[in-house]
Length: 447
Image: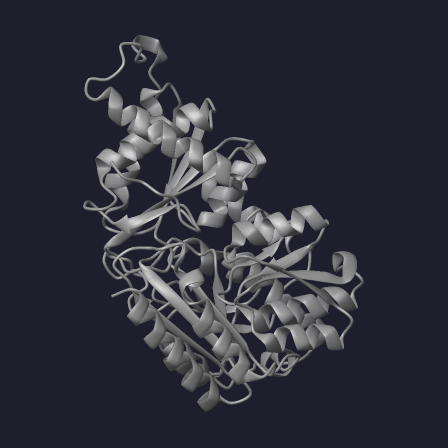
């Protein structure tokens, strides 16, 4: 029973790497380590979701917890209810991964993802449970001490009310024509409802989940259909969510993609101009484009850099008393409103900026100029935390070749068996040349 937490919980191929047996054991371990008499559990639309949800819930209930099943639900919605109700929660989702993968994200009471030390204790507890074997310890819960399952019919209404009432503070999106790509995922039911309730004229794409089509050629990783729909329909903006709706990518009226860096830049400048950007500082990850840093410096906004993952961004926000942070992938955190990336909340905030400032998205997004960036993913047989150290000489040579005019980043993925190579340079050709050289070095080091 092997389990290791990555950047965003546990993830793997459902029923082989992430099995119901492992999910059940993780439920038991979570109840023991995280605690809590009541747990919220949600899932996205993957075929394996009900299987793993049932197993995780059984593990929690076997340790005496009441499990409240919120059904198909966005990850940020689960985090929101966890924060409001002050109970721990779990989300069954592999986010933007293909449908055959799945994952489990855990939240402590208060809606925050688990700390590293808590995840380490969970891994140790799982090892202890494996040693117990079946039937396991004689002190298992019996009778009235066994946990029960409960439903939450008002969960969607509560999350929608939060988005509709708290985010815009009474303002409306009236007059905006918006195309929303739901990625056949967790926000399929709630996203059209929320944007329509706020006054936008909404066209919906990819909102017919069948258990196997989540993220398939759609959503934040594949905005091509959204680009065509926005242009063909004469819409003002398009929003592409991912499978669990914790991230969003936008499309402007001309069909141009507006990624997380540009969305974050728009929101940072907007808050700064209102005098509402705490400490005039925004938190970003090491993957954020160098052009973002230049744009913020031009406007007197400081930048704090973190490791990859919205958990790392949230930690930086809380430590610095900051209000805004995010990732190039479209995970944006408004700390006063959420404890995790929220694609719906971010989309609403972006549309609100369009309405208030009276400018099209392309004009707002021009606040930053993106430096050419090349990202390569190199498949590896196993994750090696020491890989970057092994490649130190090659990385240093690449940085010397850029002569301070660009940036290099080589890191193992926290969620997949990949090494990510990122190069930024004054020209796309220069970035590609350096990236190809580093990819070859990674392949030599991992074969």
